[in-house]
Length: 152
Image 1: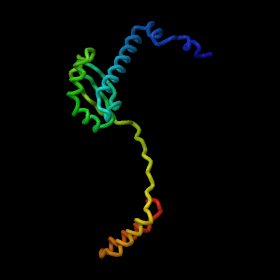
Image 2: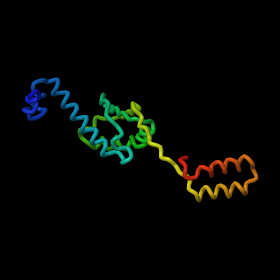
Image 3: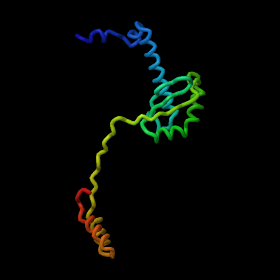
Image 4: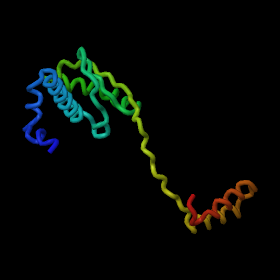
């Protein structure tokens, strides 16, 4: 059994005790996860889970988001977030927040819905074309009416 040794380990604490560097890295990762959780609690629902912590250095919290729209929305509430962080003893050292934009690598492809023109709408278009004096507009309306029950 190749991974039998891993199943004997009761937790990450045993793994990190053998190496000070690994232990320090593990503690830092846990601190970032806690801070990110605290941050998400302070954010409005529209911004929750949209930011990742990139760095904390010299009292500056650096956040990453995927769009400029989210960064701008955050800028509007940044002073409120800083005030809330100041009331949390472990986060009082944060005095400034920088937001950086890192677009998603892969864009999600949206599935196009097929639109259908109903018979009733086609009839109304033909009727309107009959009342229209503009020859070009009439031709466009009739052509559009022909698309009834066909994907648009």
